[in-house]
Figure 1: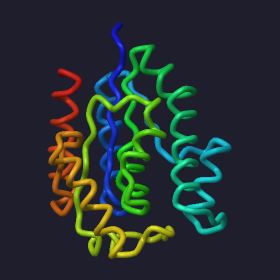
Figure 2: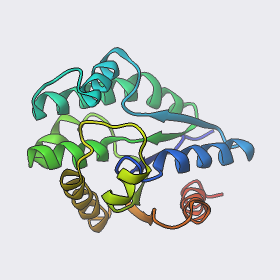
Figure 3: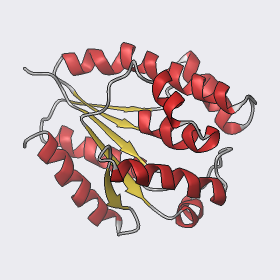
Figure 4: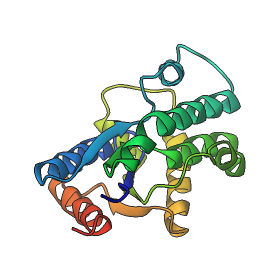
Length: 195
């Protein structure tokens, strides 16, 4: 059995990425494809601090936040993602390195440094960006995080779309009905997995 594929799902909160990534994972499992579902931030000790940052219970500078996200991600890759990939299991991850480039990159205006502190995790084999207008995403959301301000999310979206233009992400229109978004994403995943 060969190495598994790492497929990341990206987008602002409320874009539908969790719903779609879960459906893709379930579709893969139902077809007997070796698959693991993962998400970031994790619930490791480092990830726990990230969740406290997101809720506003731990306050720190943008640099501190970026370092905590990177620490959680490096640990996640070392402990969970890489071992599964090496076993031939395909890993579907809800948020990965492009989330930090988009969110912390928009916050610090220093994408280069964000990429540097994340350089010990490899790029995903496929990164799918589900695009929605921040106004739509905020209407869809029930919970709230410190990042949920329209003006900031406009900046995050601009960074994501720049990465799409650079060929790092494949964009899917998240404003379409859920089933249409799923079909488009599932085709991208099937093509990547050569099914």
